[in-house]
Image (tube, rainbow, N blue to C red; front, side, top):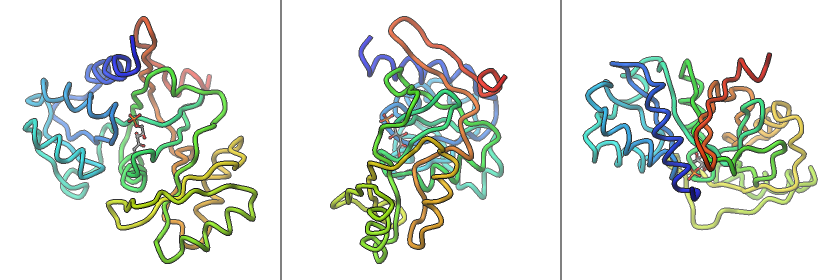
Length: 223
Ligand code: 5RP
């Protein structure tokens, strides 16, 4: 299986884990696009979706799935999203697509977070550049603060998030204590959010490899 086949396999397997007659939180990215394709086939079994990006919203509407606001949906039973990397305790780096602020908001608004991923994303140490979302006015101040911390921030040029913020893709941070770093970065004035999803990890990982899909739960890795 190539990487796209694995993304599709993980996305399709996640369908079997969804509750009936509920609103579903839907993330953003190429793996989620496969999930939306699969969701379209069972759309009568769900009430609708909360989308974390304009792109996902457009795709959901195109296949006939109603999209509602977080306020209208209320607390969500489940949120499904991909990741740039995910570790063995289901903490993630996200934000490759720049939707991290809405994604973290909806992840925290959901009872259960199901991450769908191919096996290239499953790592023992994070190596992916970490997206840090900043207000434009603060970009260079935050970048200089990050350099003082020993990191190398790279401005994602010609990119604005849905919330009119900018992104710094940051390499060189020590990510061995993800919860501590998630808090440290969010304490920098001007940072709106960062792509470490450690305080709120996934509850379930649907991981596709060359042969099949595996379901890993947070409770099983913690015991
Ligand atoms: C978007 C994200 C995505 O989930 C992440 O970038 C993975 O994307 P893909 O499924 O295309 O590999 O966090 O902000």
